Amino acid sequence: MIKLVALIPLFPLLGFIINGFFGKKISKNASGWIASLAVLASFIVSVLIFIDLEEHKEMTSHVVPLFSWINSDTLKIPFEFLVDPLSSWFLLIITGIGFLIHIYSIGYMHDDEGFSRFFTYLNLFVFFMLLLVLGNNYLIMFVGWEGVGLCSYLLIGFWFKNTAYNNAAKKAFIMNRVGDLGFLLGIILIFVTFGSISFGEVFSIASSGSETTVTAIALLLFIGAMGKSAQLPLYTWLPDAMAGPTPVSALIHAATMVTAGIYMIVRSNVFYSMSESASHVVAVVGVATALFAATIGLFQNDIKKVLAYSTVSQLGLMFLGLGVGAYSSSVFHVTTHAFFKALLFLGAGSVIHAMGGEQDIRKMGGLWRHLPITGKVMAIGTLAISGFPLLSGFFSKDEILAHTYEHSPTLWFFGQVASILTAFYMFRLLFLTFFGKFRGTHEQEHHLHESPSTMTIPLIVLAILSIFGGVLGLPEFWGTTNWFHHHLDPIIAHKNPSILNHAKEWTLMFIATAAALATIFFAYMVYIKNQILPETNDQKLTGVKKLIYNKYYVDELYDAVIRKPLDVLSVAFYKFMDLQVVDGIVNGVGSAVNGISSVVRRVQTGHIGLYIFGMVAGIIAILFFTFIK
Image (cartoon, rainbow, N blue to C red; front, side):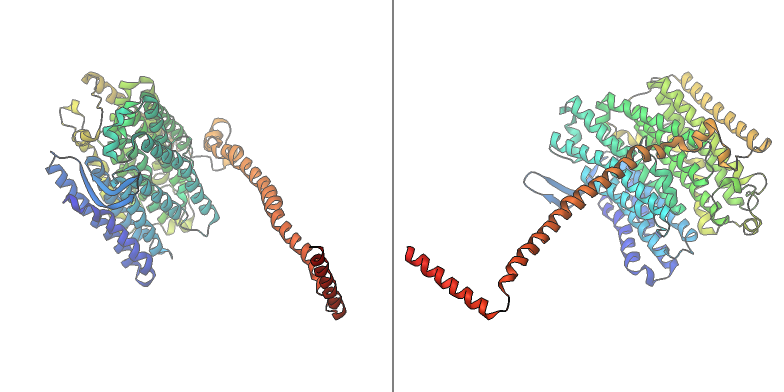
């Protein structure tokens, strides 16, 4: 069964080819279902491989060679896939959540003129993400890494007639190139140091590298992860990625692109386990990102922007877990986050669909009675991400924070604050959107309706997963077996057993639960009981509120410090190199040819007498030089 792994990326690739060449010649429904069934086929094969892997635990890692890829004197890189507990689990997330998003997209994009093109890009996106997690070496991973970057550019700028959307796509593409440079340099350093980039070969001899070299490799790889997974300071592209259709936001944020950085670091956990300083950098950047993005989410009014900053914050918590060595806990949170964040984004898409494209939560309200299914599933997703007891996010988030407390109570405190802020701004979104009086136009209210079944069924499935997903990693101090930890044990190089006693773990869980419930109650008092609404005029905001609402002016800072100086330099370079050097050379050659030709052309005047005179002068010159010799 393991040998069938090549079919997993092949099915979405075939869907991409069919829709790419024939999408406009077939019906919209056929185009959407071809793309969806391609991902479903990949999911079925992924499930079969996962079951096979679980049944034969004595051999947890399988390398499936496909063909010889790069074969030179000093560089030999086969094209082969790696099937192990980590890659098999990510296959389930990518194809499972990806399939639900494809089904949802059939209803959401039905009236769009670029329907088949959308599904073409979507299938290609899934193909490259599968390639990323299946590759058995860093170069195949990098190909998938760049592929999802390309597809994100195509999907964010899908509505390319809008200049702002094109700018958002370019921003995502360029900012990811910054991180990708670090990743590429890390791969080069791995090859120079160990003579290979295949995971098995490199990790088996990683201990032979010096601590300085290993730290440099770990930090370079982390730079790549910072770009792809939107960590400080390379996070600003992700909120702008909301320019794409909402299913794209769900796919990028929940199941594919932004999880690539987490996957890469977990796959490379050998390096981070060997470098305490690199791990500390990962933890500090992670918790700083989590707290920073959470504060921004407090005052955002665009329903998708709130969720975008929530993603940045949740990714920060995942990196915090990675930095303290809780690799399986971070992957566990990747899993639960895929459930409830896909649910929240697709739920937001259902709201936007009903509101005729409106995304400002200040112009919503009272939608619960008009969109009962969407309202209920959004409430479940909000509870899950807020850490409400016994829902999926409660287990995965608290697990990361518990491991963080073992490492550093200070980092735990800031991580806990970020979690508290998450609960507040998510319930702010829920209350302002679904409760109170409707604040939109009469025309919008007249057209409010629940989404079609192609959209609501995926929402219901994701809601169920958001409720029960936590059973994958029940805490062992409850007297149960943490299945998820045991599943990923084989790929973790150096395991850090918990040093907390049961009393301390119960205390931390109680603090997290009490904080979440208190925050939810506070949000209820503000937005339901007292009916306090956000300021409708952004210009009236002052002080700290204005600073946070404007996202700390980070984009403006980048614009002033990086973009504008580069614009000035590029104009100066253009004026000197292009206008003076390049144009000077070209125009100089032209002027020289004109000058020479203006002299030479005088030889041909058309006067016979002048020609005879020239012939006589030539004969005399020949005779003269002949007699001299």
